[in-house]
Amino acid sequence: MYTASADRYVEFVGTEINPSTESAVDRSLLSAFVELLGLRTGERVADVGCGPGRVAAFLREHGLDVIGVDVSPGMLAAARAAHPDIEFVEGQLDELPVGDGSLRGIVCWYSIICTPPDLLEDVFGEAERVLAEHGYLLLAFQAGDGEAIHRSDAHGSGLPLVSYRHSIADVADRVGNAGFVVRATALRQPEVDHESTPQAFVLARHQ
Image (cartoon, rainbow, N blue to C red; front, side):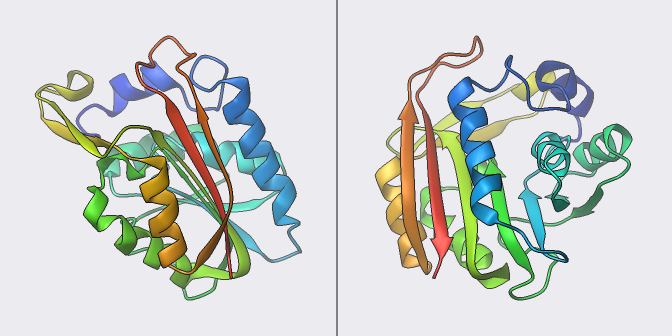
């Protein structure tokens, strides 16, 4: 679906983090993530579920060595076209194409919304595998009680999509079960035009 709708999706969200798609709260959390990392030369971070590379570009602009990962070839093509100086590779949230302990930070910016609640620990377990000691994980997602949202024509693709509005408490618990210490959670009300539900954020550190 995301490959079929790549052009329309990019037209909707753009290829950069911007006030039309992220509130000031969202952007401040991304900035805090960068500051917390305190990266040293040679350390790397990942934008997982990167879409057209919006967060990857933000991280690169802040001086980080970043890799973008996505399951959709169409999204990866859009990301490479918009950000030719960043490496983008194909991979799944629960099977990342990087080595054990090779990353200092991971951002999953609305990429867990297509993962059912009972499979989230597979995603967080994979993040635990690839993050170095004391590395950081930042999650953003639409908030709810774990309910599934069914769309028959997602992003004008003519194809169906099921997404999930995760409970922030459930996500925080599952992140903790995967070997992380939750450092902060945030929940804000809809602010941007396209939003219809509260937005949730979880920041955690690898033990």
